[in-house]
Every structure is written in C-alpha cells, then in structure tokens.
Length: 596
Image (cartoon, rainbow, N blue to C red; front, side):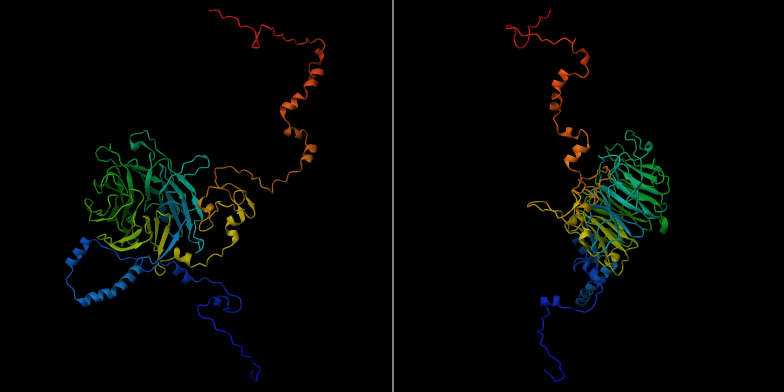
C-alpha cells in the first residue's frame, strides 16, 4: 500500500475471444438504440463471386478469336489485371450487388409490377392470390405483404372458383389502378388497395364471329396499358382476339381486333400469347405488337384502324410454341421476343420481315406461360430469366449476355421487371420467392429505404399464435400433445399464408362469404343452475322427458274423465272387438276369391 492511500488491485486480463467479455459493461448511462444502416445493407449483399461473367458459346469464342489480332503477353497480363475492375464496373452499372427476398406466396410467382412511384409492389402467383407490398411500412424484420387478395372471391357465392394469376400491370400514367389478368375470360381493374373497380364483361361463346361479341369468350392470357391514354388498356385472349377497353365502360370493349390464323387446320383461330403497346413519347411510333400460338408476330397501328395489320410475320417463331415474352424499346424501333422454341429474336419495326438477331436461349414457357423478357428503362439492356434460376442481362444490339448472375439456383426464373425510378430489378421464381435486386449507391428508395430503417422490436403479442388459440378464440397456454402438429411461428404465420381460413382474434371468420356466427366460449357460458331454470321457466322440465311416456301417463285420466267427450260418456257404446275363432288363423279370416 502506498502513502497516498491508493490501492492497487490486480485484475486478470481476458483474452480477446473470451466469451466472458460479453458480460462486461462497455459504457455507462442509458444507451440509445440506433439502426446500423451500413450493417443492415451489408447483410443483404450478395455473396462474393455470385455475379458470374457471361459465358459465350464455343462458336462465338472462336469467331472472336479469329477477329482479334495477336497480342503480346504483356497485353494479356494487363487484361487480367483489369478483369477485377470490369467486374466492379458491372456491379455498379447493373443494380445486382444486393438483394431483398420476399417469401409471401405459396406457389410459383408468375408476375410482378411496381407502381410508377415505386412505393407499392403487387405480385401474382399460381396460388390464385395477389400480394400487395408497401415499402413504406416494411422493415428488415417485417418483410411481408400488408394484404392478400383473391380476385375471384365473391361475397355472393360460397362456391366461387379460383384462377391462377397470369399478369398484373400498374397503369403507367396513374398509379392508383392496375390491370389484373387471371385465367378467366374477364379481366379486372383494381385499385392499389386490392379492391375491384371494374370487371370487364364476358362475351357470348356461341357466336362464331368474334366481331359481334362484347368481350372475351375464353381465357385471357395477358394485357397492357395504353402508354398515352390512362383510360385505355388492351387484353389478349385465347379466342384469337385483342380487345381494347375503356375502363369507364366495362359493358363492352371499345374495339375488337380479330387475328385470322393462316395455319392449316386452325379454322382461322389461334391463341394470342403476348402483347405490347409501343410508346410514342420518345419519338417512336405508336404501335401495337402481338404474338400468337401459330408462330406469327403481328403489328397494328396503335391509333387505328385495326381492321388490317400494318405488318405480319407468319412464322416468327415455331408454330404451336408459346411465345410469352415480348417487349418494345423506348424509341419504338426494336421489338424483342422470347419464344417457346428456345430462341430470342430481335425485330426492327421499320423492316418487319425477318429478325435482325437470333440467339438460342432455353425457354420455360411450356410450363409457365407468363415467362417474360424486358428492356431496361433506357433500353440499354435486356433482362430475362432462365430455367436454371439465372438472371441474364443481354446486349440490346447483338443479344449477347453482358452479365449472368444466379438469383434462385435450381428454380426457374419466370418474371422480371426493371423499375425506371427505383433502378431496381424485381424477379419472381418458381420457388415462390420474390427477389428485389438493388445497388445502394445507384438505387433509390424501395428496398434501400426498407433496409435503412430500424428493425421493429419484436414482442410476444405480435404473433397471436403465442397468446391466442385461434381454434376456440380463448386466451391461455395451449397443451401440446405428443405427436401433435404445431403451427409454425417462424417466417410468415399461418394466418398470413391463409387469409381466408380460420378466425380472427375477435372470433370473426376470415372468409368474407361466411356470415358472422357468435362464438361460444367458456366466458360466454354464464347460465344459471338447473333448479333456478325449472322454478322460473314454465314447462322447462319437458326438455328432459320422453314424449311417449309423457302422453301415456294421461291414458287412465282420459278414459275415466274425458275432457272433450264427457257429455256422451253414458250414451257412448262400448267398443267391442270380434273374437278369433279356433278355425281362423292369427292372420285373420280367409280372403275372398277374386273374380276373373
């Protein structure tokens, strides 16, 4: 001990990896909980090496090798040194460095659409539901849809059918509505909250001439909006027609375009598989281009008349293969199609006769008809999926892959969408996952805002499976029997995955078609005892009596002192029954012979 009264205490030093360091105080006072935005965004970064460089075919490599001049070894070494820089530049050019995964569907996600502002995402699936996601309300720990909608559900019928969702598309000029096309003859216009605003009429299926029908007579495959008029949309159906609708007049289409197939044995009919409406805003032509099942590619003037097509290519793709992907560049000059014959073809609308470029690309439209292909917002790239789960970013000039990156390995990639304002790519896969690819440096809002928020603090009351028995609607600890099935509380809850099954916390049915039935719980069984009921309610004991015994106990009283026939008791003759003789059987006297 020193003279000034200070004590020196030997404290054992802990190693850097000692687990006891977690229990030592790091600072004093109240700590402020702030979200570590950089750490949250880093957690969504895709693994290094996942963005693979594009692989060209052997023939393309040989052709490139022949076209190049011989280089020295020093030049090759310089190229190897710059390869890493090129990969980094690809990551900066394309928003694929980070991803946000939404697992809200149960089956394959066939379509996805973002509103013009990029604040709301609508996805459709083969589970016959629409999932509405709002980026403003999501946090890193609450990645779920705020509403699930079945467009086919009807309150007037308990036996309503459900249909897979083929296509959804927000109005590019009005973010408050979107077009919903399901596997049904009637397309729907819905608002951004999932409510049906209009349902187009169904045509008369017994009319042979499609020009005389008021709507589609068979399944609608896809649709799109007019890029100039917010009230006009077009739908393509399997009845060999394109129908232009005015959303304010749902009782009949504005104009019908009948495509007469020239294929042998088709009787002039085919199925329209894809449609796109070119925008004249950037100097291009207002054209309407559609693909058909007979392999033809037809182009009409967007302003009309639509009696005859402006151009037609009969065998643009192999007949009887589903051409589900079609898109037009922002200048309206180039059209790209992805057919079921495993080819991607590029067409020039000014020379609409033969493809400019044709490349081989495996197709998934034989299983998933809504497989699409899209131009980037600036038409500087073309994106599409593949059966292996890779996202292909193609050059719009020669259709060579600029970048191939895996999104859902082993699960085909069906739907792709590149939003112009957010600079983010939305993909839908067969494994029911929606991936939002983004770059925190070049992307804005959307997934970047979601990962920049503080995680929502989880509470036991957030999941009703912990505190409420949904089957009976009462609170209490549930008894888990051995071998019983426990509800999964991880990820999305059962109520979120089945929006019309079961009961809400208040006891009301989730199915809007079912009437409200008061639920009987132990708290509602407040009836008095049996003695009080028998004393206060007349004839209440008759509920426990046998009706036959209750009537027979008055038999002697009715015989001795009849209530209604008492005046004739003395004069009423006594009923006498005939006695059976010895010769007669118990069955009765002999029957008379029938005269013939």
